[in-house]
Length: 569
Ligand code: ARG
Image 1: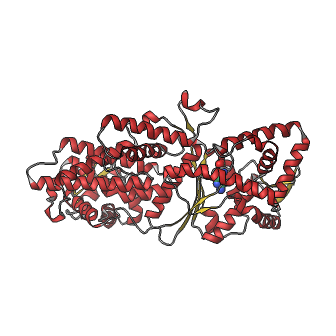
Image 2: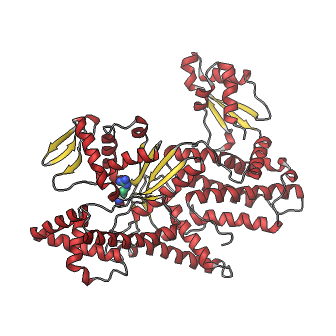
Image 3: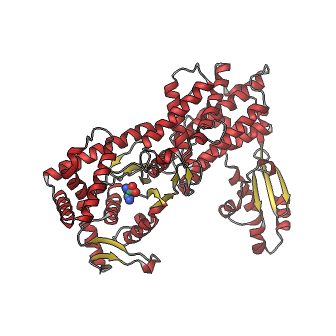
């Protein structure tokens, strides 16, 4: 499609002799199309050109040569020049592209670039909590969007499957395992065993000693301990998988921390050779104060062979060598900010090419709270995510029963709507903001929710069903699409690829979520103001096609976020 912004900066370049690439970065896109589609502020040039912004704006307005087919009007307001895109041209561009491109918005900007996304990563024998839900959803959305832009994406589930706590769990299982039936809710029971053995350890040094012994045995491949460890893994992963099945989450690799246990020696050796490894209270640490990080990074403790941070450093080495990554991003809550600042700093000492250390990025997100009351206190102090998802599906089912009792395949639609609601809720606002998991609010069909997007999509589908086929592009009269409501939609659709680029630029899927809400709202407005199914074929064809275009972009966008679309609801 025509890059209108670029056309403008090239034309300004000819007038004032400043590189169009630089000018391009000055051009603003006003939120509201009423005051033009692009605005060029002349304030930045005032100093350089030694003239007032108003005078510069006036001069540019006078001398600029623009193709009327692209930019139909310009206006000077204060120190700004406002540019208006030719309505018919942009409508034609969008219509042509939508009709010819199955994968609208897809691109190859990421060709030959490798992106590792480390996400979800719950811990064995511990509950998959509501924060894990968030990393699973954010990581999944980023995965899809990078891929759509042509990147080679490697999704890794970095399970927490290693550490001294497994010595405790093994010892606990030896002592109380026979009291539990692990075929149902195994994680709750393992967590209980862990709690009991911990209590015992604080009372009895001898028990603690046994736990340490068990962990050593596990590290050295002892058959019995390994068998138990595997059992804990299988049981936990079985539970996690139920959640992944509901959400539709997939990973290219399940490589937990244990995978790196035998790869930390190399990290330690490299760090030793740099001379930066210091002794401190029986531990080896790297002091990071010169990089502005007050807390040193512990590399190993005398009584533990490896720790979380060291295994993460080994993972960086491994990922650099195995995946040759351009970016390696970690999606976890902001509680791990310090951890990642530390390991990214220490990673600079590992002798890796700068490409890798520059490519490390922590994608942090805020806390998720349950509304106080029933949900947060059920089953002790945590809620099972699987229950939460199933509750949302049940609520969705009730709403559907109520709104559309004759709908076919209600079970399946309820699942799509319920899960869509949860996924959207996790992506609706800027990731760093804290969020509330409120089932009623996220299922509100009229709110800024997943179901609202799905509902709007279904509306587009039923319009098309009424005319039985999508109008041919040669039967569309572009003039029909120059009214305000159609233009709102067209300009949003035009922006889609740019939105996707913004998402990966900031690793911020909410940019896409917001956009989709804007698009759905623009369609609702269009739908209310413009009659679509009318006798005039010209008008009907154009409006039906625009409806189809909205549906297509809503579906592609939602799918990228990980949300499925029902055909009816
Ligand atoms: N298992 C950790 C947790 O549940 C998250 C791991 C994130 N990834 C990493 N490479 N450290 O908090």
